[in-house]
Length: 538
Figure 1: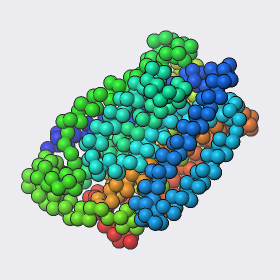
Figure 2: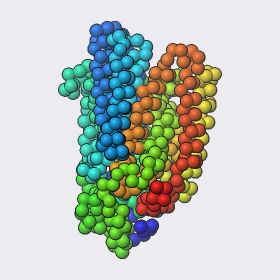
Figure 3: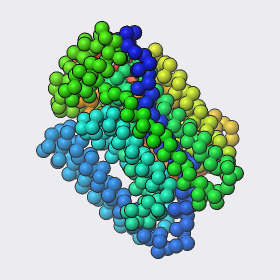
Figure 4: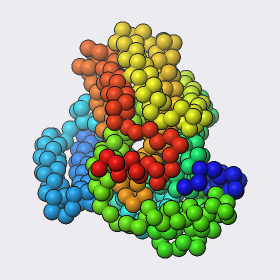
């Protein structure tokens, strides 16, 4: 593989990369838009149930049915992955055991009265906030299938359409209630639809960039996808603040109307993304897989130049000879590392900070306006240090950044937990939160996606969907359980909101150890050279 793109068209490479990163921008926009609306959604959908016992019972029943359906869909996706990994007989046996455990859990979940207790309200709140993540799990699970059947480009187009539908449905769930359910459940369904788009984009955007970028630019260009995710979050923080500011942080207006504008605003970037996708090519690797080598060579001429295009095409062809090799053909370690990178990226607690930042700041004593403004500061720090990662990932390597970042996050989370425990929620708490975000942004945010886009060999590139699905499952677990822990009366009485942050700090320590011991360095290696690492480990 040619390491230099000197003879390629740099403007072409950058332009198609920027279009692909809009998938990341929408990923960030869709997942962060909820942050400014948490309090309003709780008031509009949940607190209002306290005065309507019969409506509350219907909502709780439909919520439980929704969870059961979601679990069934996830079990199906997990089963498909297990069959792909272990073959039909063994995969179905493992799936049956997982399904049995899920059924036991669901039966226990239903075996409670239909009353709005504190635990039920907190659980419902967590599900409303994290419901998009259910769709992300589904989208991530089917990402490999979509990337093969539709291609990387058309898969991103599908994601853009789902983003748009979700934005409209989430803004007016009563009017778009074609499902004939309670409005809160209609809202949840549309958030799940948007989440499917996020799940697809979270896999396909970095895959697209990694497959079209020259080796010596790949780390930086894939990191731009994370930059776009964070930029999308920062944009929506400004949008949320502006919407609240126009009514001077009026909680009543936000509860009734303001949150709708927050979700509806996503239609603008989603439409823009869809239109631009018509003007970018499919990736050379997918074109070779589809038997369109002449088109692949045409794209490669723009990427690496006319002189080297034939050589690169031959190398891609060689690595794709075995189109449908089993996902365990390179051993289980590459898949295990991919899964654990994804899980640790979430278990360090980043999306708790990003989704619940205004709530955390309110716990520190801030008002609605101030909390949303402080959230913008979090987004700005996230963006700034993501740029630092982009500038250093190809210079210092992936492993050093991951280890330093994980340890920095651990220290910050432990310290933040103690500020809550000792009830010293002042400037120090803000500093610890911002330092935590900075360490994440310079490491596990962008660098995890770089590693995931690099470590899977070409012939099992679809196995990346396992890691992406695992990431969203971990995200759902963290986001759903945070309000259950953080709003629990007993834990508040004992730990003063500090308990959950200590858990995330411990995860940071474990993440650093994992990278140090198991993750290979991929800096400066072509995708084909990285494949040889796993060949040697078989």
